Image 1: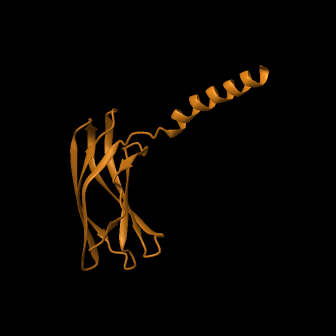
Image 2: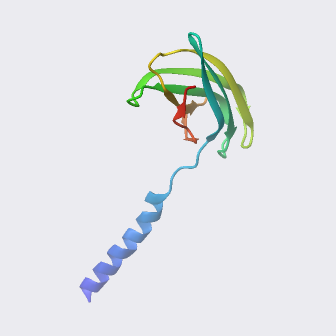
Image 3: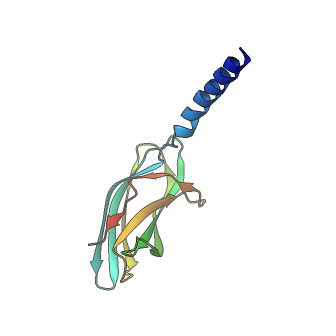
Length: 130
């Protein structure tokens, strides 16, 4: 009888822990559009992001990690999308010229608020550089 109770307790404990471990934190920012085109010694970045998190963001900074064919990060550059408050559902656009890194063939997107708190990003890439 004690063995049965111990097995039952272990099963209940595992069942209670699994849903918590399986849950992922919801994204704060979603990349809706992203395009990068080489233009001489620069890379022109254009895109649109949407705030999907519940909390109001205090500004939004987009960070681009440019990657080599081996998928190693070559350089990281950033641009400010908005310095004000951004609520759920608000969209922001970015247009920026970045210094070209010759070996870069793709990039991924990360996001931070103005206080340098990293945000969760959905559809973060990798995106090709045309």
